[in-house]
Image 1 (cartoon, rainbow, N blue to C red):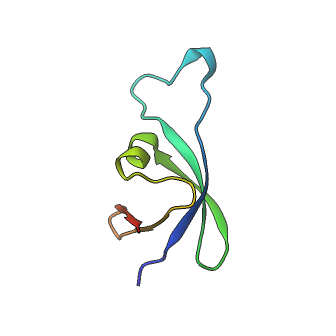
Image 2 (cartoon, rainbow, N blue to C red; image 1 turned 180 degrees about the vertical axis):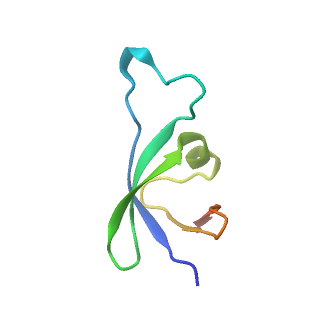
Length: 72
């Protein structure tokens, strides 16, 4: 059985006037909570969060290949 995670908070990095370094994908710091109540911070590409329509309060799983699946 896969563990279910809940998104508590999404923080986008601030690169100031210099902007995102060339060749790097924008990664957000995502505070997640495990089923046991532990909290961790994961770095997840901003584009992936939009693609999967993941927002604060949503639940998701991660498979053995690192693929994220949003739960309804």
